[in-house]
Structures are given as structure tokens and as C-alpha cells.
Image (cartoon, rainbow, N blue to C red; front, side, top):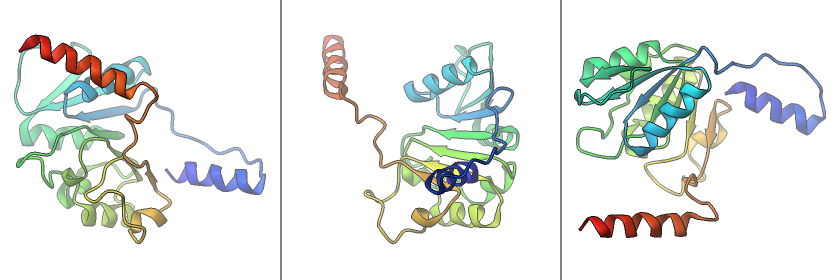
Length: 190
């Protein structure tokens, strides 16, 4: 994460300095939540040569052979310990609210990066800020927040190891036609 900020600063100063970056190939990605988004992340990560771990509440029997599966609370802990990148795609439910907090960040590798594209409430913001400030984890990429838009005085804005995206992953030219196609498909099921 600091590498991105460093590259942006170098660009603005027109400085040419070669920096080492983290290669995705041979890295471990842990995907929390295997809905449509989580499944797409798993597929793309595998193509990039990443070792893929995934978390589900329970075993369903349809797991892919190239994905190392983890289940339940113990599975979450196992996934966090081994992952270089933790991608959270969870919906907000009673059981996912605040699921990633101080204890979970302490289990992660110091060089790990959290990516949250699910729901902001799944992450304990205070615990994440503390982990980022202390260097417990390397960085975070956040696309969703408890309060949106993110308040202008929120500390995330000023943290060099945080990359903020304003809940815009679905803000594409064809989002409305895609949504309509999904609606029509679902309507046929009724």
C-alpha cells in the first residue's frame, strides 16, 4: 500500500526511482464469502497464479479442487494466518457485523492487505485503524464503509496505507442493462 502512495508522490515530483513491489503470483489470497463476487475473485486470483483459500460457514460439497477451503470460526482464523491478501465480500448479517476486528487483525501477517468490497459494517473501523497505525497489517483497500459517503474528517482519508474507492465497483456504463438482465432472469424463475 505504501508503494502506491510512494509511486504517486514520485509521479507528482517527476522522480524516477525503481521500487520493489509485491508480486501477486505465489502470494496467498484468502476470500471471505463465496457468493458471486467472492467466486469471481477466486477465479481471477487463480489465473494470476495465487494460492487461493476461501471461507464458508459450512461445507457444501461443490468446492473447487484448486481452492483450499476453510469453514466456520476456526476456518476464518486459519485463513487469516496464511493470507497475504484478505478479500472480504460478505453481506451484512447479524453474524457478519463486526466480524473482522482486533483479534482477527492480530492474526494476519504484518505484510497482509485487507480488501473489503462487501459491507463496511463487517469491519470494526477502530480496530482496523489501530492495526494500520501499529503496522499490524500493511494496508487496506476499502470500497465500502459504515457511513457513505465517507465523512471528510475520517482518518482513512489521510492514511498512506489505505486506498479508498467510493463504493463504485458497479458504476459502469452498462450497469443498468446488466441489472435489467438479472431482473429478467430472476423474474422467469418466479
